[in-house]
Image (tube, rainbow, N blue to C red; front, side):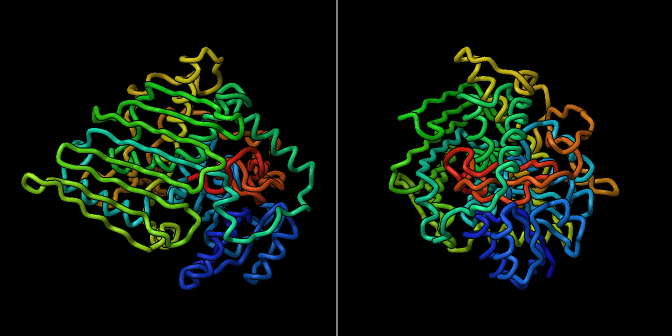
Length: 466
């Protein structure tokens, strides 16, 4: 058993992560919790017998635990660095960071870092990876097609009956965090508003799960983003995003993501097509614990088609927690660490740059500075060429992992914490919004030191953004 601290006590933390930490009391003892809402931190602290905090730096400095779960919304780069530098194992919700510079600053500290892409741990996904290995691995893939239908997050989380967001988050803290998030987005893509921001946030907070699956089945991230489109539907929410391009093997991928507020149910389909058959995964709403993902395998049987369906009620979030325990106690590398998280930042920036090229919108920041993607070898974590469990490779005394692609070589930030680039400063985290920006924690928590979190309610949909 390891002692853990939880930063960020928003809706997904309370509906998913905390119940599973209770379920796996054989692996975890929650000894500290942190949220900008003192009332939320106090209530959860009493539930677990854990020390409550409203500032991440204070919790990290107090110690008394071996691992940290960063469940705040927005960028986690500075918070992850602060925890890793203190020697803690870190399970970091996505996005790992908004900028490549933030990811680059984690180099050398990342041997104990795990990015929380729970779908990679879904038993249906692991079975599909093994079956693909038997079919020839990534070289056998002709195309990967993804479709996501994303209703309002409140509808997905109504079953949890969590009540309204807290009203005791300091307004000034929420305002400051919104400014920090805007500054990071400008550094990433040159703007903090409009279609480019929306596409960037959709990719980094929701489509990133599908990118992790593409890395799993294709052996690496997309090699190109040849097409990117965004349209708003009725103008509410983040609209629709369409991406397509080439994989490193020469195969193609396509992603169609739609925010449909009135849609009756969440639905996510990932299909891997090979010459001899197909693997199709249909994911349920992610917050319904132990709801099975359906894997349908089709292939030939003489002159007939053979189809088999596999389902398992083993919970992917729970499997992810077990993998984090293995990282913290035995150093077992995760399916996605720094290299994979950084690769997804690159893909998001390539998507924004391509959208800007096709629409004439101005694009700046890191996205405008990217060299041709093919000029840099793709990181391989999350691949499945043999159906085995792929992991990042670590070396050196601190387990220095593979450098992320497009590393800027920038030194760690030296600010005062107000820009999210400095050392531990005022606590960040989400504000009082409901579910945050597609994948954020609604009520947020301590965020990053230096206020790295983003306020809840920064857009819709919220929750894990899967």
